[in-house]
Amino acid sequence: MKNYFVLGIIGLYLLTVFPLAIGAEAGNGEALYMKNCKRCHKLNKKGMGSSLETMAKKYQNNSAGIVDLLNNPTGKAARMMKKFITGLSLKQKEAIADWMISQSQGKTKAKTNIAPISEDTEACLSCHESVTPGIVADWRTSRHAKTTPEMALNKPVLEKRVSSETFDKGLKSFVVGCYECHSQNPKLHSDNFEHNGYQINVVVTPNDCKTCHPTEIKQYAQNIMSHAYGNLNNNPVYRDLVDSVNGIQSFKDMKTALVPPDEETDADSCFYCHGTSIKAKGLKTRETAMGEMEFPVLSGWPNQGVGRLNPDGSKGSCTSCHTRHAFSIAMARKPYTCSECHKGPDVPAYKVYAVSKHGNIYSSLGKEWDFKAVPWTVGKDFTAPTCATCHVSLIVTEEGEVVAKRTHRMNDRSSWRIFGIYAHAHPKSPDTSIIKNKAGLPLPTELTGEPAANYLIDAKEQEKRRENMQKVCLTCHSDGWVKGQYARFENTIKTTNQMTLAATKILLTAWDKGAAKGLAQNDSIFNEAIEIKWSEQWLFFANSTRFASAMAGADYGVFANGRWYMSKNIQEMLDWLEFKLKGKTQRD
Image 1: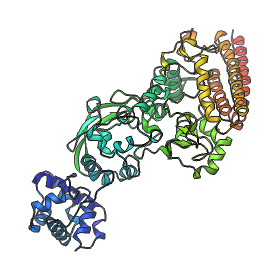
Image 2 (image 1 turned 60 degrees about the vertical axis):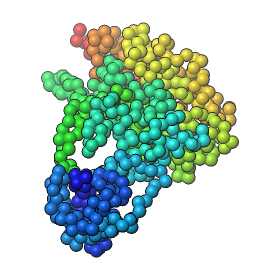
Image 3 (image 1 turned 90 degrees about the vertical axis):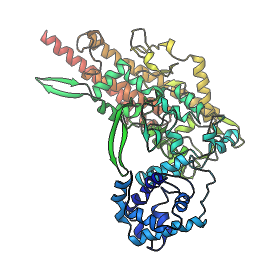
Image 4 (image 1 turned 120 degrees about the vertical axis):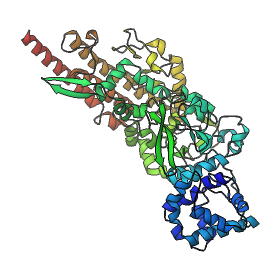
């Protein structure tokens, strides 16, 4: 018992680092205790240290014993206690001791929460309210901090935010706190470590979130985003593109040389969004406010990319959209969250949305919308779509009719994959690195545009997804409006593919005539000027035009980064080819 008391009393001294004690009257023992001690010494249950109730009984009628311990700390925690003891005066210590002794007569009653916090999470909070106060403050604002799984299960079907039907006894009656998330599946986590008597995982993964959200996790696993790391890193063509962008160039003797990028550069660039591979590499001792502690050493960390490879073998990161530790559905529904990774010239979804009529309505009126409501009622909770409206959220009418079911497979309502060298039907598998076209390249189309049909969804599935999206559109627009918009969009797919093909034919001619080195020479297809221009043709200009058409942000798809640049780029590629061929002829 003494050890528990000694270990727990650390909280008394930790807080003296801050000017909390100074603001309390020297003679007000209760105020001093509440400000300096309570976060480690709960009133009637064990936290990081023994409860007030336990200590009051132990030191009954012996306030001098408490003061003596404060003046002369002993045991395992002595070093830390001595470090912070100077923060309290003798009078303050005596006031605290006197008030603690008075509690043996039952004058203090613990407050109870409507949604109780587990003792394990209370133990986490007792330290982290001082060590990482921002994290704790975020969590306290969250639904997790105010709702138990049992309470969530009792919601009407359309209002439920959990998809699990049962919870074990140890979880269902407490709010979802630190321990409930960071202790799941410890045997699967290579990042699991002993921390103040608990086995804790550093990284919370989709497999851990599956405890409450199994349907959402299953859907996300079928999502291209969940395979974003492998789809980039395990595809030789795209990996070559990454190296050409992130590699370090040097110049000597009228030649450039490329050194492939290191892992830190990749993690700071493409894999920030695609996700890194996180691995545990042993333990390292660090000095903390609580003394020396051991923590796992993680490579690929920090990261919250959508296709992150986690230490438990799972893929993805729920916090890409539901940012920890508030996990706000309102944040996930707003376009700013998607803009973290969908803002650049390759996937300019946010920029296009911002100049669209929908984006204008959101910017003007969005502050009046209810982003927390579940289900989300069109016309009542919001009056124009955000990214989540079209791709993810459960949408209903004011009569309660379901317009679109909640999904975490982002392409359930998308008939076309508009990102790529050519727009094409969506792949059947979220793992696109398995695709091989007729030329043997890991691409969903040939370089000349023909689809690798065996790997892509068929016309019937495309129509089903098209109808899923149009149901959302039809809640605000007439059938004629929606059909007209889709006709324009699919015409844009046709014309941007034609423009990409024109650029590709120029590149193929350059390779064929020896003006550039390409696949036949086993050379990179991204390291010469004409190849870089070809990449820009589809990666920036064609993609921007398609996004602008899909989301009715026409201006962005014309001069900002779209049709004008596709035409300009083709002419520049042709001029470059003619110049190189002329120079080659003169040399020959």
